Length: 181
Image 1 (spheres, one colour):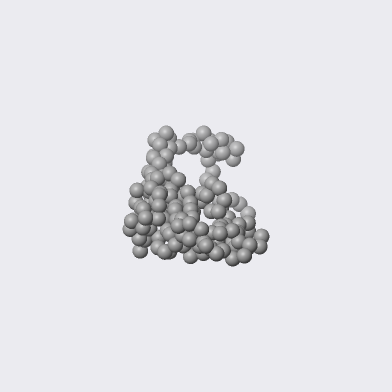
Image 2 (cartoon, rainbow, N blue to C red):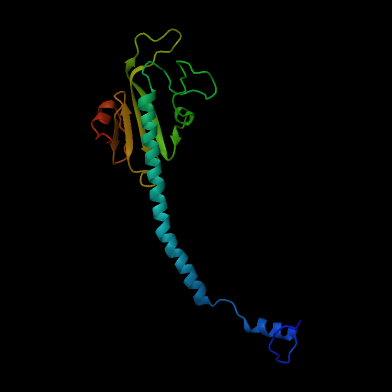
């Protein structure tokens, strides 16, 4: 069997050497164009990714605020606790352990939970008296980067928001904000 090649009179090794000399790499302009295209794509994609991340942080913050609103019976002294340990009235394990232990940060937000309106008058036997009311807050760690809106809730279960990102200082301050629809 004979290979169909053009007979130029030179050896195959000489032909390969000749091809290697004639091939060159990319020119500087071609490389600069590729780099410019990559930078343009990055300039478009990175802000969209940051907005998506901030939106996810806000959604998680609202979800945790709902957890506080629905899972915090006022007679409990602590909605937190260690997962795997038995739930008690003093450590009920109703919320995420990260949110019930310092520094109370998750998904780019700082969370706070404070008892209000004094202690429950007659707690169940063996339980530490909890509070009659509570104020749960969630504020972005870095306004404009991790979030732009802060949230708060009280024992009414309504979640309120503040577009300035400021933390509500009291139940009255929280209830003065617009409710989340």
